[in-house]
Image (cartoon, rainbow, N blue to C red; front, side):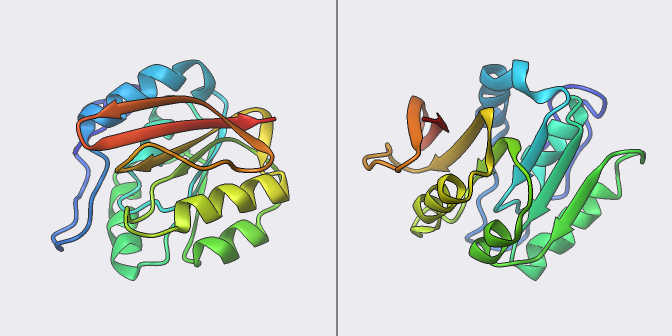
Length: 178
């Protein structure tokens, strides 16, 4: 796993040794950032189920103004902090270790990019989208990206699914405010 582009291009990121942890594949991450490239520079981003921090670090590398990383797993936060330590400083970020609901309920302000990459078998992604819409956490031109193992089949009040892409067994669903 590596940083694909920007200030930290080529930086190798620490990965998990545990089974059941599924980081976003480099190929999927590259495709994702090719789609949202015009929204990253200067963005305020939330990497909600951040794991190793790969998506948020890619944002920082490409010029995001600020990234909030959140994960409830102590192992994830340990790997994340190891990866953040590899950055050369000057980056603006914060790390929280909260359950996703507590994180979303406690956030102030809005985000231009929100990455939602929960364990595939959970309902946490759909719940997150509902909370994001309810709390108005997505900026006017913001995008929430939900990674999962199947197409998105339901509706979320306050958000519109405007694009969906499939990469092997991975689906990326893109949402904006209604």
